[in-house]
Image (cartoon, rainbow, N blue to C red):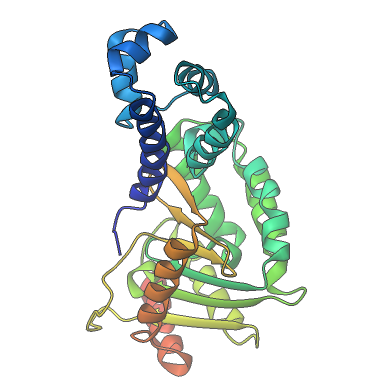
Length: 283
């Protein structure tokens, strides 16, 4: 399994570029001839054909027309848009603050039956308390330099979390033990968050596993990801969220989740680790 989720996005871009380049060759055109027909600089066709430059809708239409394959433009434009929609830049998504992103994801959360979440950095959003979420979202806002709507974003995050308590939803959650110690908020708020974890893990629809510091790794630490049923995996990076829907890629993440599940501690073992972290937060 690749440790770089952006490779999935690049693969989708390269698939579109490969189709365009094959179309050029089938039409018997050189890159220079295609560029001349499109009215471009000679290097543009090469950059698009090698997936170095993402083509606009207009570029794809011009390319298809130059090759005498206008009828293929619609499908290629759709494929190109799909590739680009997989990559959602945080700065763009948070351009008006973070509240809107939380509100827009509510339908996805409400229709998902089985959540599988692997957290290697912070407590998953649907389990966060107000104090913990406030500390985390303030840090994100400051780092990204985006509008400060933290209070509203926290309320939206908590509202979205109603799925833990309402409806027919099941949650399988895996946290690296280090997550219990990361001070993304002040000590009292972290302590409250850890108490909340102990409470929520008792719910019948929640399975909470803690991957111990000293566990023998059969699956190495990965980027945080959220799997929504078997249809979508959202992978979080520093700069963006990558939404993966290709069945093979989704299956790979679910296979990694299963491997991580086998090295996690559950029940009393997980509770003991949370309690040790709570003692450290209060020290």
